[in-house]
Image (cartoon, rainbow, N blue to C red):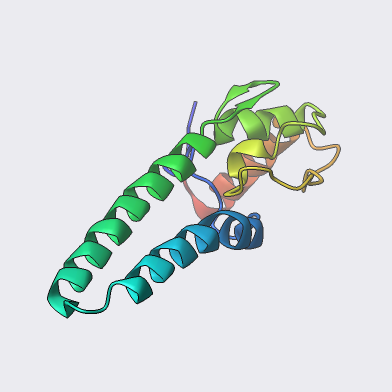
Length: 132
């Protein structure tokens, strides 16, 4: 079975606002507050700032990678989430697609679609373009 290369990666625009305002900005504000307190030695301050930002990048990158593998009713990850949505799961299908720790509920974009219907569409598109 073909699995897309973006498997288990969150969608950048899925709950980006929640991720940014509830999770990322408070961390950045804490770093900014510490930088303002320590402005005497600018070189040392710049070094510390770079270290803190690099740690933050690693922490948030790890967090987002884990979120792309969240569990759904059909298993873990975005591929399983999509399958769950195809099977009518309204409660967990969207979890691995969201950047946020607490994703907002989403409606599956292809209600009533089945895996069989989508495979037929894929076959017709492939035939139209001469792809085997």
